[in-house]
Length: 227
Ligand SMILES: [Zn+2]
Image 1 (tube, rainbow, N blue to C red):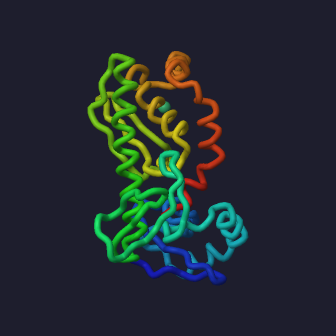
Image 2 (tube, helix red, strand yellow):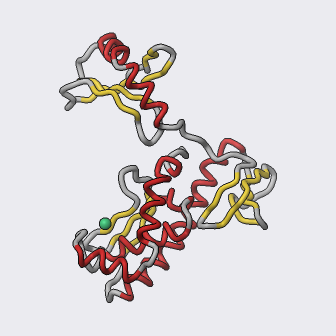
Image 3 (cartoon, rainbow, N blue to C red):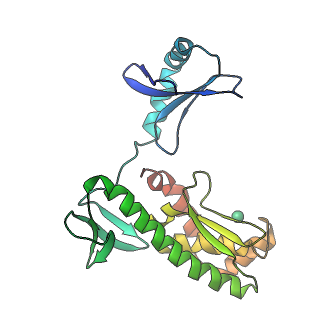
């Protein structure tokens, strides 16, 4: 573990990588924090110099990548298309649950973010299982497993064994967007590619494809803005 370096007031995580051949500066998409990746024996002061010489670039990237936010008391979220206000009630029990228009989160404040995240994951999982199975049935295929992940580069995936996976962040997108991603992945059970035949199937199963794809393009950063 290398201590982070501070470059003109910005903390940059230093990661030594055995396989790295060159120095690389990037923004970690999971945390929104800058990282410099250096070869194993590379001196830290050289990494510092490297970041300094790329500081203008780093600043521009940080502007493009909003800092990650935690869920907090009083925050309004749209979960599976339902608007809910987070209400922290420390002394109650039951984890996270809906009561009227509120998402009640019980227990210690330090667990609030994780509890809300777990709640969203569970909602996405329950919904995706039903929707994916329904879609697969229309295609005479079957779903073997549905997993909820925190993927950065894609919203969903499908294996030839019928294992579908979805990113939990889709729970914060409008329902038609989540529907589209589930249908897209389930359609891969019939067509394991992005051929014309595949898109034709998706279009038959879902009328909102174009609108959903546009929404995901426009709001990806927003969905990834939560820690
Ligand atoms: Zn696909």
